[in-house]
Structures are given as C-alpha cells and as structure tokens.
Length: 155
Image (tube, rainbow, N blue to C red; front, side, top):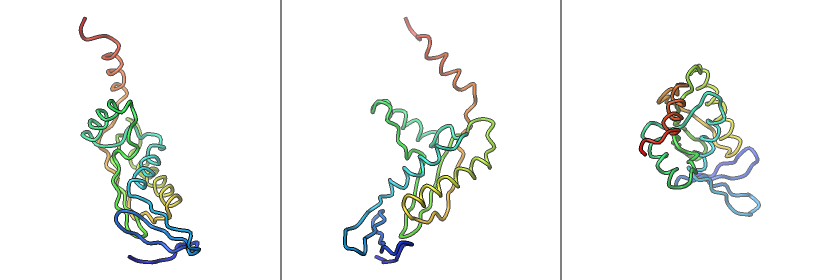
C-alpha cells in the first residue's frame, strides 16, 4: 500500500477498489468505493444536453426490468464502468445520443463534466474517459411508445 500526500498534505492510500485517505491528525480514514466514482461519472454524464440514456442495449433492457421491480429507481451508474487506482481513475461510458446532437462535441462536453466532477469530489486524477455511442434516439421513438401505451392491445 502506498502512502502519498494530497494537495492538502493529507496522506492517502488505496486498497481493494477503494481509495483510502487518512488524516495526519489521526482522525481516521475515508474510503471511496469504485461504485461511488461510477455514480459520480453517471450523474455528470447525464447533466449534458444531448445524452438521452446511458448503457448499451442489454444494459438498458436489464435496467428497465430492474426499474419495474424497484418502482422506477434507476441505477445512476448504468452504462458506466470505472477502474480506480491509488491516485487515478479511468472511466468507460456507454451513451444513447439524441438525434441532431454533434457527437464529437457531446463527447467532449461529457469528458469535461465527468473529469471535473470526479476530480473535485474525490481528488482522483482522471486519466481517460472512453465514450461508446450505442444508439441514437430518434424523435419518432417517443411517439411510437405513446401510441402503443394509449390504447389497450386486448379487450
């Protein structure tokens, strides 16, 4: 386990998918789980206009079933995978983009927002953010869902 100093001079250590930091005043340690970093990344990515949904097709399908069973509580980290080291994190994000959005600009905005959020909240340096665009959401996709749900299929 390594012992380095953060900008504030607080020692930090990392083990088992968690970033530990201990105060030099002997007050204790703080552990940040990988799932926490994934949730931060997921929230930050969703804040960008043009991101319709997160996760690949299979992840969205499984998530929809899970949401139905948990009364709509969606997973913030859906579509996000992270690797957290002692001082750095790498992030993979799967997104569905709204039709008409400039994908390169959207990806750059997601990278900026996710990097800022993770670095500000955890102190970890973000080394890379890989973005995979799985689908494009078309405006007609919503209309099809509304038509199908407005009329019963059987009487």
